[in-house]
Image (cartoon, rainbow, N blue to C red; front, top):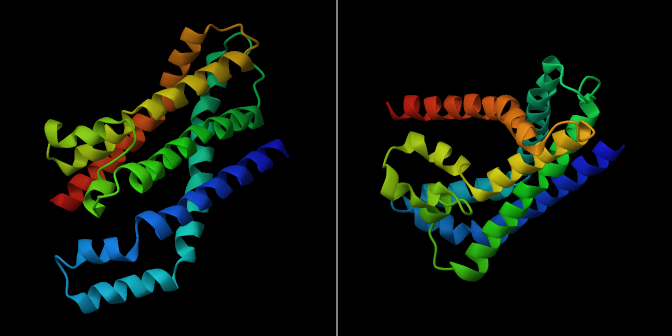
Amino acid sequence: MRNLILFTSIVSLYFLLTYLDKHYITTSSKIFDFLSKDYPDEIVQGYIESQKKWWWVSYITTFILIGIKIALVTFCLNFLKLLDLPGLENIKFTDLMTLVLTAEFVFIIAGFYKFANFYWIDTDYTLESLQTYYPISLLNYKEYISSEKWIAYPLQLVNFFELFYWGILAWGIQELSGKKISFKKSFVLTTLTYGTGLLFWAGIISFMVLNIQS
């Protein structure tokens, strides 16, 4: 029941972020300005109208992706059982899921941070700048690092919120072990489990981008 409440709260907040983005950030005028440089006005207008007609698809997609993400991260952390460490022998999958759901609020904060940045601070933005921005990450300095598109996602992952997320996961593992494991060791365990899965996922995304480019 606790996990269901957490998941419902997370999805609701992501729905709110989606609503705020579509109505105040990624507006029809911004989309039109971005696409009209490469496509005729009729095609752009048709695209915008289809977006309005199928508005609910983005919400369904958000729900599915969040569910998959939570399940995959919990699956990665579940490998802790194989290490036979003190305090983690009888760790439950549901307890790990509670930890992952709790940590997910970090990225919701990042989403609101991004919205606040473009709604109140950097108001003179384009869709290009919107797409190449992630709060407090190396992605914001991509133009100084590399022009290759495949490197964008790995750079996005190097950010303050991701580090904070790792910290919460490490703290949670320490708590689940009854503090029989130090925070330093639990952070290493987070790296071995979630970190390995994240590296694999980043590799898949980068590989897909490289194939699309070629």
